Image (cartoon, rainbow, N blue to C red; front, side):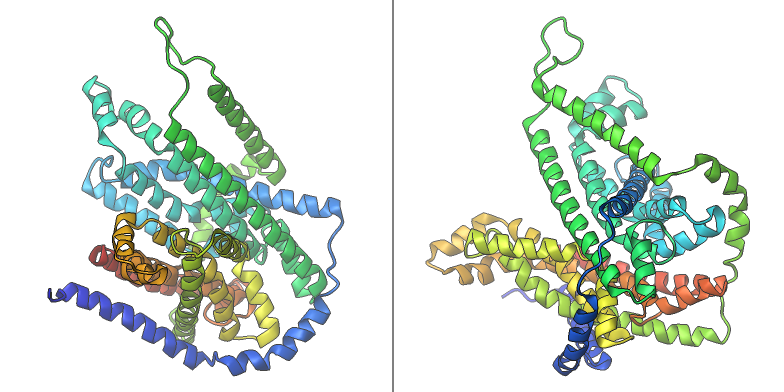
Length: 529
């Protein structure tokens, strides 16, 4: 029997340590069945104050929804436009040099590490309140994810078409446009749609710091303790998120199907362009509709380019307010609350991972006993993914009280949505031949699952688990804004009393923590691959 390597043993030790730390965090925060039982009375009381829901008028609700979708679309479009050149510089097969690639990758990590709330605070100081600050904050922060996935897509292209273009004497720009871009367009659009889903949920959080839309209206309602209006708006956000996710999923599947079926009709002798087939007409119409939607979003968001360029001169002065970081007496308190934030993330990751593992397994087509069971758990995952963690945190704060328990429970439920989807996808992507081989021995469905399916998906699950921990640390930081414990409270309080050095210190501490987790995840993925 082959002995496990030192690296494999180290990887197993790290995973075990994370799980043990998560169990310790659950116990240390006091999350147990008695905590939930004791909160039942509060939950009933909250329900009595929440109903009947108080929805705004149809016109007002449509205006709030339209404003939110316009801001999110503009932010996502900005992130795509910024991410394409960054991704080209970050991809190993298109970057000009190792130093350029390293610099682009560092820029991607920095964009992902700086919370969008912090960016929004900075941009509010420069550009004033309104949609512009929210678009810039979400757009720049999104580069951290979008550019990374774009760079990965570029590195996975077939080099054949690019080499053929190069052989004709084409320059570097022509190589990118003719040999690289056509291969990655479906992946680029799919990533953009996925980020749009994420930004829609983030817009709710930014509403609590002043970004216009449903989030701001919801924040105003909760500050007045108007739970009937606040939860009505929260339900509206949930429905919009679910509808947008379903719609974007349909578009992504359509793009993949179009990419697999090829382009338009054949070019006849003497023609210089493809004929106007039904497929080409349809794609042209889609492109025109997309352009009109983008223009409508820019108009609805009321973005002022004059305001943008006119206020750029104050950017340097505003950034100067955030330096130097605060290192005085509050530093020890910040470190203590950072530990609370990490414990919230660990507890939420472990609780959520257990639930996500079950839901994700039953949502996988090669594991679920029937198509009906698969669809049921797919719907559960989609619904949970549509719930912004901030709304869940507000609900749990009311039910369990202020503190880290509310944040951990909210993030645990949120973990089901993301990790459950990743688990289902990983299980469906295993090699079916291995499953067939085990099934041929007379093994039952669960024997096939444990002997063939699960071992193949285990490396991906480990990587996804660490990625979820990374996500939860960032999210736990921001949930403190609504009283869900951790270092986020200091972030919001510092902006209110204009202690911007504290904001910088919080950002540095969170950045360092997230960077450690990301390096650990990178090392683990390299080992378990």
